[in-house]
Length: 170
Ligand code: FES
Image (cartoon, rainbow, N blue to C red; front, side):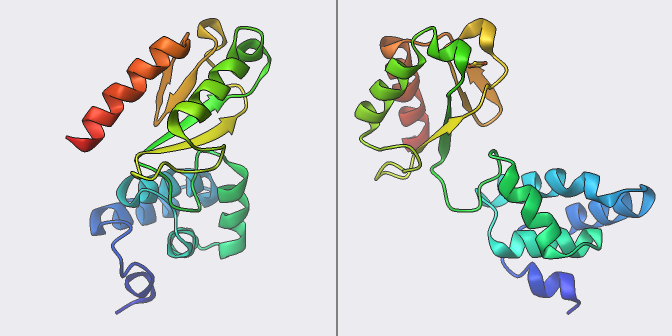
């Protein structure tokens, strides 16, 4: 077994992904540019990025784990701990505040029964505050995976949660 296989024992990336990322890294001047792409791929496959995911990324790119960890912990859409199936990033910036974002955040905490950073008991939702999500024109809003939802109010966010719950339990 080579070192990559040793690190990848829980199958964070498949063989094709490892081959593609390794080849790509060999073709570009700054392999660091691929850190987020690889971490995202790990997260997509595994739900979050365990230590082995950081190590694997470093190994593929010829970097040290700490160089990868610096990026992983800086970027709030990379999860270094387990999260629910639907991580809800709620916008915590000015346009959303001015349009009811704080009430929305309060409502979500009450509805889901969790504080920021916590996951619901059924493992479906993790509530996370986030800087501007780039949807200011549709404030206030949330981002779930790669989709922005807004403008939201308590009624529409309840509907969104109910739909996701149904999907998640289906
Ligand atoms: S301030 Fe909330 S999306 Fe920009």
